[in-house]
Image 1: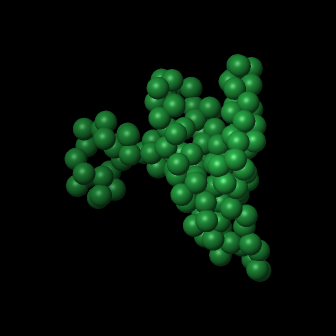
Image 2: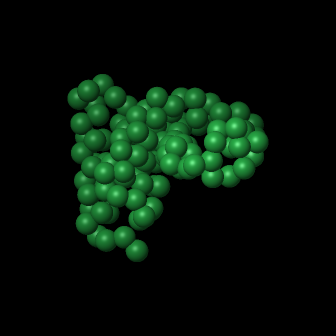
Image 3: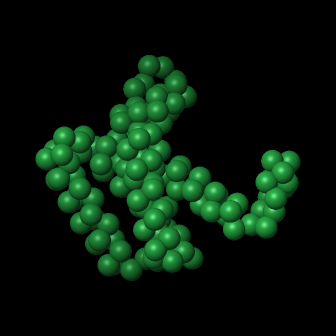
Length: 124
């Protein structure tokens, strides 16, 4: 169970970013989606240092902003019928998936297994 301070900081960060978004001309749903998606995995993994969590959070928010439309379009194609996925939901998808990809890349870099073995299917 996470401590109440972490939830409070996450809430204040998301609220502050959503309120500041119109000042910078950014869609507030995109901001909330990117921060929420980043927080989902970064706050749920306890075995990482605070610096690593911060780096994953910043990278994930950036990927959420950049990949929101693509993730929303891919999710729309996977849905039955003509359902259009909002960019905010796309940002949640993109940022949460990017955390997993970043963690996998970090594990691959730290692993002594050569790249050829990884490409053959051996897990690090």
